[in-house]
Image (cartoon, rainbow, N blue to C red; front, side, top):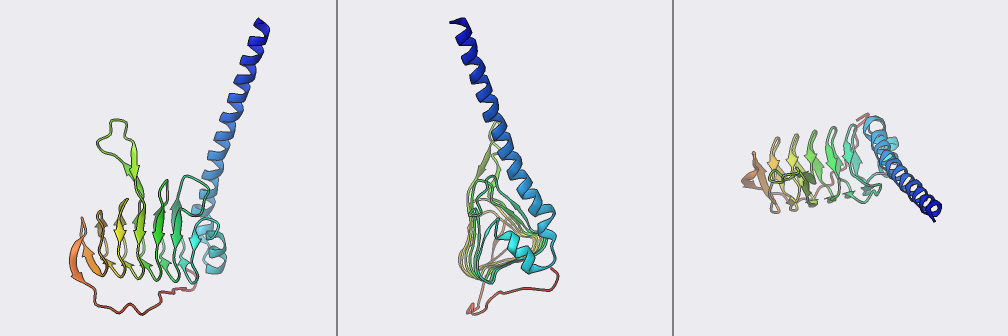
Length: 204
């Protein structure tokens, strides 16, 4: 009876070790997959090669382009966390944070260089520094200029414009032009929005 208990305990311990090892392997695989994109594949200057690989990480619409050195983050292996609509362009050195929550980018969206879109952050009032987050939605024909920061939970309406360097912490209504930190309405856009944003520069 004592030997049987010891044998059962040993088997349980072995099973626990295998589960722990498998969990670590999955975490390592996810990290390696992101490193391959962020440190290697995202730097490929030829769009037709780069876009072949990015389609394994995000849902990319027809005519959309993700330029070089765009960093992506997420916790799982699914490519549905980040969706980029038809003819939209994500310019170089942007950050797309799809950890735990999704980013949905509409059609004909122009996102300027070094823009960061976050879906996850820390709760400053939490004693354990726990994370909080929410999805980000960007409507069709939105123009986001360079070095904009978009925080978790924000919805940007169709045709809106976000000026360079702005920090967007609240929803932006359709056709609004916002600027500043925090971003505030400065004007209303006057455009029929009849363009396609297709942008495929050489070696970028």
